Each structure stands twice: as structure tokens, then as C-alpha cells.
Picture (cartoon, helix red, strand yellow):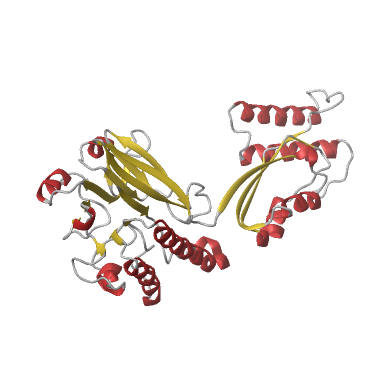
Length: 392
């Protein structure tokens, strides 16, 4: 049996320019998730930790950030747990590579080619771990965009490397999906994976955890251990992978484990249950959670008297959540009573807006900004036509 912890796309040191004052906090959350991954590896006593690229968000890193990473890897060394890392497309192994500037294995107390921490490079694309009867193949390039598929030469590399019971692949790449994902910096196909001769292929680059099979080869993305962006609701994981062989039958089991703090929740609120803007603020404030990304959608029939300013609500609740998003998918109440004749300005106005809203709903665009604007215009117009005072 061989037990692995597979992680990737930690993106330590990300600047998060779009997050303003929260950027520093998010960087700490990402480091905390990396630390939690190491904690899990130690608690589970795995045989091998795999880092499938983009451990760092860029090659421009201060020494203190690299020291923090080395200190975490040193905990693996102390526990005699091996780790194999590859560069990605953010921390690419070019002339300015952070891995050229700093000898990370040596900093972790595991220098030399036989150390417990191994960095694979274009010059060293595989490592034989005799104690685990395993070879890890990690073909990488010295450029961000690959000149060819990293799996192209893998059969020859396997033939040239020592024999071993387990063959593990480690790549930072995109699996091509016809009609959806056909271009990227590093592309591999499921047919290449199926013909690779590997037992397990650990992938990085996609930030959502997922696994599949190509032929007899199990391949998986661990996803980012902490979301790099707040819309990545399948991030926050690492993978515990168990390879076993019994009675001549080989199995690969992939289990997701949560290490990130960020949680995601979608919430629909019926507009008929909202009395006012302060009432909605109070409803949402009751769910306050600094680790929660809350996506709120207002649905149902919205009364003419309900006046909401979503920007003000988001501003008031900003300290209560990691991120709050409000969307208006509610509908204006149906026109009651006798509608003005179509030849009048009022009648033409109501019919035009109502028809345009219906057309957007029929086209599946009822939740777009354009539909929300039309509904608001219809609500305000009906109030004005009914003689109410409206503040714009």
C-alpha cells in the first residue's frame, strides 16, 4: 500500500489586488491552508506528499515567505515523510525562478539528490524512491507555455527509469475538453493519460477538486487548498490517495479532505418576506461569518413599496462576511385593475416594459442586470402613475 497527500495551487504570496484591505488576510488564509495540509500529512502518516505546481503565486517572493514554506517542509523531514514538488505556471522554472534563487530542499534540511524533499526540474524529471518502491515522473519546462505535451516522452522516460511497483505522475497542466477547453499553457489529453503507463496522475492548475479515470489511469486535481478567488467554491481541499494491490488487483482510492477555511453558501430570499431594507439587513446579519462567501438572490414577487439599495446593504454588511453578493431576481407585482388603454402614454409604457421583461424571462435572461433594471423601472412607473411620491 502507498498513501499520498496530493496538493497544488497554494499560490502563496498572491497580491489579491482586487481585495483591498482584505488582501493581507487572504494571504494568511492561504498559508494557513498549506500548514493545515502539512498537519494532515503528519496526522495521517502518509508515505509521500505531492505538490503539483504553483506553490508560490509568482517567482517574486521575499526571503521570509520562502523561509515559512521551508519550515513547513522541515516538519515533513523531521517525520521522515518524503515530498516531491514541481514548478507550475506561476512559479515557472525560468531564469528568474524562485526555485533557482532558493534551494528549498536544502532550506528544509533535506539537501542533495537523495534527500527527503525533491524538486523536479527540466534537468531532473523523475525520482526513484527506493524505500517506497515508487518512481515519480514530473516532466516540466523552463517556459510558462509548454512547447509540447509533457506526456509526449513519458513512455520513454518510464522505460529508462528503474523498475518500481508504483508509477506516479506529477503535472501542472490542463486536461483538454473538446468544445470547452482546447487551449492553455500546458495541455494534455485523456488519451495521453490513458497510454501513460501511470498508476496515478496528480494534477495541478485547476483550482477545483475533481477526479476521473482515463483507461486504467486514475487522475485528479486537488484544487487550491484555500480559494485564490472568492468564486472558487470547489477549492479548499487536498486529496488523500491510497494505492493498493491485493490478489493481483490494483486499486486507487481518492478521498477529499477540507483544509481551507472559506465556505460558500447560496441563499434565496422570497421578496414577499422582506418588509424593508433594514429588515433584509437584519436577516442577513444573523448569518454573519467571517469565513463565509454568501451569494444572496432575492426572488418571488416584490411589492411596489419595497425599496432596496443593494450597494448600501453590501456596504453595511461588508465587515460581517468574507464576501457578500446580492442579486435581484424578484419580479414586480402584476398590474392590477384596468390597464390604461394602449394608445395612452401610460398604457404604452406599462405594456412595453411588461413585454420586454416577459421576453427576457422566456429567453432565460430573467436574472440579468437588464431585466432587473426593467423591473425597477416598471415598479417606479406604476407608483408614479398611481400618484405616489418616488425618490430617485
